[in-house]
Amino acid sequence: MCWWKPGRGPRAVRWSSLLLVVVCGLVVLVCVGAALRGRPVALVPAAVAAALALREVRRLRRARRPG
Image 1 (cartoon, rainbow, N blue to C red):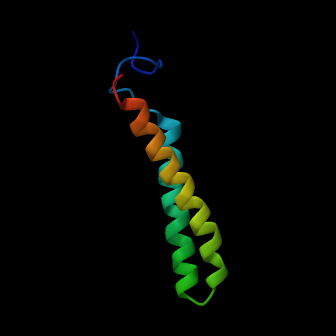
Image 2 (cartoon, rainbow, N blue to C red; image 1 turned 180 degrees about the vertical axis):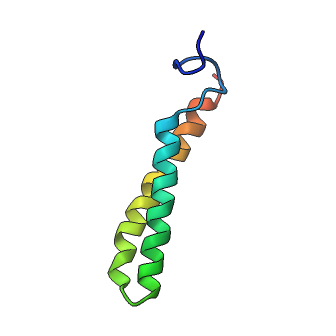
């Protein structure tokens, strides 16, 4: 079985999920930086991006759980 095909075991990496979490983390950092510079409305997209990243991390952990 090839490493890039899904279902190669519990150590398989879901690259789309990893990319989503990384990009959401970058968006949160940029938005928090903007909020610190005097744009408090930037905390709204930061909260949305943080919620998306948290949901994706929880989904990945649930998928790795045996049973």
